[in-house]
Amino acid sequence: HRFHKNLPKTKVWAYEGKVPGPTIEVEKDQPIYVKWENKLPKKHFLPVDTTIHGAMDSPEVRTVVHLHGSSSRPASDGHPEAWFTRNFRQTGAEFVTKTYEYSNRERATALWYHDHTLGITRLNVYAGLAGLYLIRDEEEKALPLPKGEYELPLIVQDKSFNTDGSLFYPSQPSNPPPDLPFPSIVDGFFGDVMVVNGKAWPFFEVEPRKYRFRILNASNSRAYLFQFSNSQSFFLIGTDGGLLERPIEVQSLQVSSAERIDIIVDFSKQPGETIILQNRFELGNPIGDVMAFRVTKPLKENDHSQVPPILSKIDPIPLTEVKKVRHLTLTETQDKYGRPMLLLDGKEWDAPVTETPLLDSVEIWELENKTESGHPIHLHLVNFLVLDRRDSNGKLKERLPTDFGLKDTVTVNALETVRIIMRFEPYAGKYVWHCHKLEHEDHDMMRPLTIR
Ligand code: C2O
Ligand code: CU
Ligand code: CU
Image (tube, rainbow, N blue to C red; front, side, top):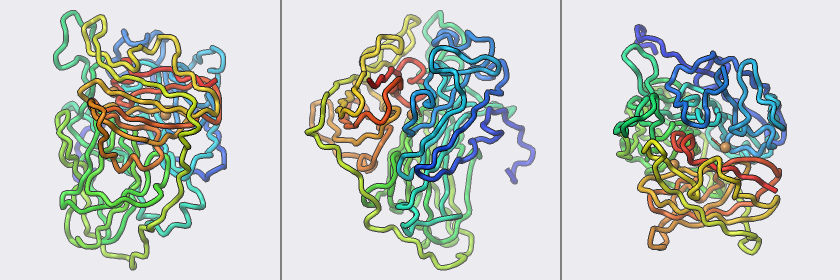
């Protein structure tokens, strides 16, 4: 950072030496193969809780990469048990390859790749193992959206640092029960420094014109309610699964861990000003300012980009095709140490598989959140549509703007029930579904999803 030449360096774990990892950009329907190689050191530099899923039983650090939002075959999906270490790969059944195939059959959108190792995902992602993956298609290219240097990924994370510059991650919950093994998992992580695209206290100089921002919330636990300091409105044009049918003008947007938003922001009325992207959620130790946009660059040429009134078409899933409705609860309990533990459908990861949809079948899942906090629920392999949100009395609530797009992660807010609908295709096999607050995912809000 040019203003802080003397700041100490921060040790991270990185894909290809970069944090975030390099953005992979591909064309729809052009499959790629990625050879993932584990060159991580033997020991973790963050506090590993050895009581969680035997996280460090192997002599070296484990990793496995999942391409979030992709529809990959089971062998390329990065199943949490498909981890491998530097010199040793788990040889059970299908989990022997580290060359993954990505078919890129999805619509144009922003996916992301990140570590998914059973029991230490929160630590590996926090250490830096995450990156963006953009799929392009002809439909998107034909739209007059801001392009080139006017389209920018913003990978948003909250971190904390020790005074020597190293990453801080807590090794004990804030109110630890007695006799807690050390170090112990926490039930949520909230950092006090905003990091965007790997930079702390970020700012960006812009021209007075429209920009397209591809925002990914890659924070461990934190959800944001994004808004601009001058309260200017902006357009939501896409979500996890690609473009919306029509742009939605908004003044704020809720974005939980793992969700992506595709937005158009117009700076043309603020030459010379600084506009701050802010977080209006007061959760955790609140961070108000996310990043600054300084409208200081001269306009290079007239801005011919537009927010077209029609963007795309999203195929509905007819209710007449529904084969099964599952009611699944999100609950909080305590583990044997008295620590908070979160569960899906009242079950831990190791309990027998219960979500076993048939290949090509349509299901509705009713996600009932019985806890006082929000949970971003993610399914591997499929995109889904959000049908509705209800409060704890069953009364319909207003949907979020992001509910109008194709989703792979949906936040079920405190005490809400959200219904989602999806078709389980195109592959059968072993996947997972989980809460994407990584501390919840690791303990123990993840369940197998086996498509038969
Ligand atoms: Cu973003 Cu199962 O993960
Ligand atoms: Cu995923
Ligand atoms: Cu959760």
